[in-house]
Image (cartoon, rainbow, N blue to C red; front, side, top):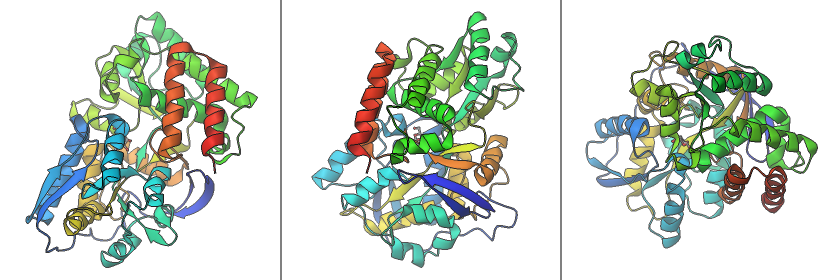
Length: 430
Ligand code: GAL
């Protein structure tokens, strides 16, 4: 199977050989985590603190406990989707020289930050010892490799450009759930009908969910090359195409709930769709996990489709786990990383998390229909890097751009957002 992966600021289109990624029928027998002499506590830092995200982490911890009964899992999760709170807490710990045993980071530019700051141990030997190298898509490994070394173990692959819809709300508004909009213009027309029916067309929450919506409007408006160019200097942030894209974002925002900034996180926005108060929510596919956890049925309660104008594109992100320099229990951390990398760990975790396994030998036979469709899409779509989830740009760039996007939510000033985004790109693009 050949795929194309376009990642990070380099945004190079690479030919990928990801045979079996996410579980093909011909996958070899599942790998188990190797034995370890390690004892004591393993402190693991994530932002999977509640709801379906915690359920995913718990499923992984269950496998860890079975793999390593001599180790105790210490849950150091800091709440806040997309690491909105966790990343600054982590940065302070790393700066103070008091790292956890392992922490969650996004594959791509975000991980590069930690590598550049010499905060991560080299895991190349760990990959060889655990025979992990061949179990992950070669080009995902390539993207995680810096100067011949690899510093983290990916636990999953998520997609950010998915719209989740309430089937009954659409039907009542006269919008056919079986025929999702395939362009922004068509989507706006559907959202006009929904507005007329008295419902909120599009649910969104605070800053990072707005940034995620922004990235997907940019992707829809500019296309794959135009979007990638925003991060590698090939697209002029000051150009007329970007102005049009920001205007489209402004229109998109006009369909959202006015209390968006007071919604604490992504789950309350997805909940509005579940409850039938809103028709749509643009959200990464951790939303699939919430629908499943809440007993909702795809097709009758909810439906999903790619962000209009982005069919055939997979806006990619992956959570990858590290061994920080100075970790209190490095042997315990390696045991944790072994569970994460193992096929059993990946199956248990991803089934509950809504994502798809990064380990190509993980079984996915009993995954949901959505997840099976994501596996298929990942095998054939063009892959781009998520802005809001650390794949496309370093944390400092993301933070500055998010501040401008958040301000725009209040003032709707297109040229101010465009100028701020252009200045930020000038500052950080290498
Ligand atoms: C992403 C993360 C996902 C999910 C999401 C919402 O950044 O990669 O695994 O946790 O945030 O919190």
